[in-house]
Image (cartoon, rainbow, N blue to C red; front, top):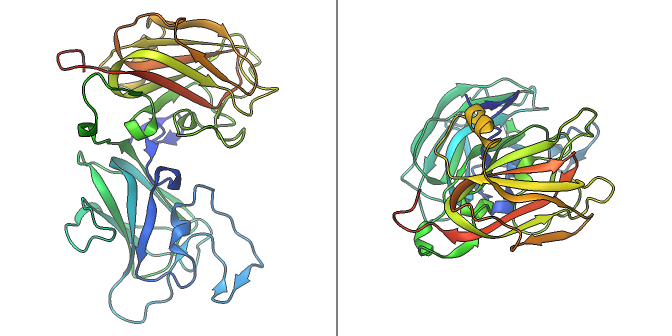
Length: 335
């Protein structure tokens, strides 16, 4: 199982996020709790005295008690096709009403709700009530849909799907200028030293941050040094422009920031972290301001074709977005 500290699958993107366009498109039954809640980005909650017309309100997807043969399932359509490396089947707050077992199938289809073509992704697995089940997936294929099967019925609070966004590169030509780091183009954060207040995976989301919680923010540093994050581009390329956006960060934005960049094929995260310290400087230490977009072009060094960047902030604080605008590597270049 891939881990970053005590956070399994931390280097992978959460493919189930509605902001990526992912939707729960079908459920055999969601009498007690709406199927859409299954991929709600917020952590599940329990409200003791909350009831609705169908009974006890639960924060998740819950089917009624099945009185006929068979089992319930729901279908999730990924907003962007992806490779799945792990899932979390979360039954928090479901105690006497959780499914004893669950499995996951996947398929590739242009249909809203595919009727066939499903293949096993996760075999039937025992579940516990009020628990998170972090399960590794071994599949090198790209999928468009997942189907969560529960046996025979019951409730699941959340399904988290960890993996890689796999863009359709046929829509781009060699030399096209795009945001090489954007999540929709396959970019992802890999490792950071701290993300106490905000996830590193917010850095390359589309649009500007909606609030201070929608960025990467570290704890207040009380020891010497600085904070950092390493990110992989979706496709190798040469950098033309950079944007560092501190939207909503006012009393807690970094004083300065710098960027290093390199082309590397290193996969092991610890080895990548070690080598990143010596990567060439793309942007030297630069003063930042609060709640604003910072654009850099002439300040950037020519690092050639790169695949990864390391953002360092001094000494700590929050950054909302990082954009690496560049030209896709041509055939024959690294990558």
